[in-house]
Length: 92
Image 1 (cartoon, rainbow, N blue to C red):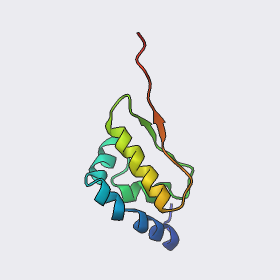
Image 2 (image 1 turned 135 degrees about the horizontal axis):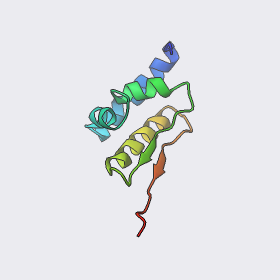
Image 3 (image 1 turned 45 degrees about the vertical axis):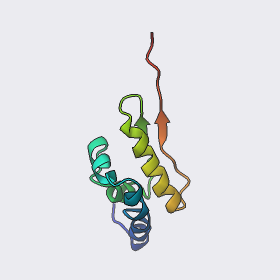
Image 4 (image 1 turned 180 degrees about the vertical axis):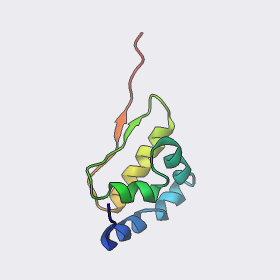
């Protein structure tokens, strides 16, 4: 996908800015938990799509931070999308 100046400007406003101030390890977290290399990469590649991360907090509690990072970025870009948050309970 070719990034337009508008998309890149929106991504720059959302990340790293306040995202990296609130979550200093945000880029590392995104790199470890997703197929994206950084917050900016995740936002740029998902900007013109319907992408929303599915965050399986039951598998790794760090997914809660990932969901918060994505949601904060979407709010900063006035995008209505939010992360899917899944908390499955273990069957007894």
